[in-house]
Length: 294
Image 1 (tube, rainbow, N blue to C red):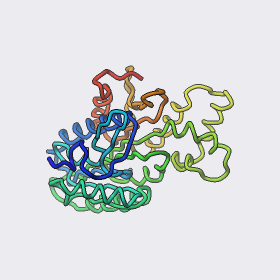
Image 2: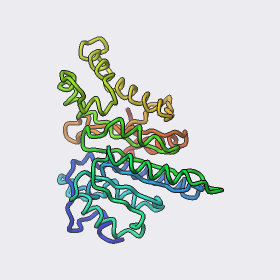
Image 3: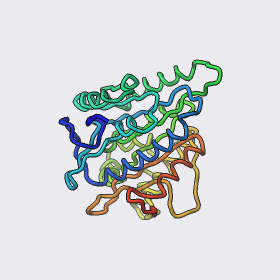
Image 4: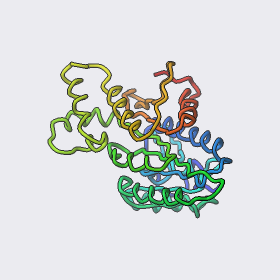
């Protein structure tokens, strides 16, 4: 496999991250593998992978001096590739580098690299998918889609999630920015008008939950309540919530490697119970092979 598609230096820019990025990428890679191995032989019209905050394709961890494939290249190098890819990033330089890396893939002709705000371009991507699904071909199902929504901070907007929910089958892996919300919610709560927190949650209901926590009415479990609220909105869009009566949970928490402070969680959404079955299989263990606890 060419160096562009290997977890090694290839002479092109890479983004630097802390060691916690390894956990997130491991969950994603294992889900993609389960997803594609299980679904590749089914009569789906297309299998789309969507990455709205794609970056340049590779990550470098200074503490360990190791290189890792980023989310777009993990999806591209899986043993059973998707039929079509949409990679979006706001920075033109990131897309230029990502395109060069993707060009080494045998399925490069099925990759669309787009410069722009993923929140805005999601509409065009969904319209393309809906056009594919509108073709009535005997013996074929609708398209099967997986969207990885992993911005650096609070860039993801709820309206984008509602747009992506329009196709019949669109699984979502969503970055829930727990650390970023901890830093910014207090400030946003005092501000008038729409803030990035309002855009993330799709309204102002988070303010009531935050106020109850801030004033001690319901002091504990702020993020549990906020995530349940968010997942309730996902259910309103047709996504199923599968609860498991065990100690594992389905929202892995990624922490700062040194301070162990919460950074973010990964929320999963699917309109089919099989998607949740796949996700729960993946998150039962962490990147080190250990059974994960809450």
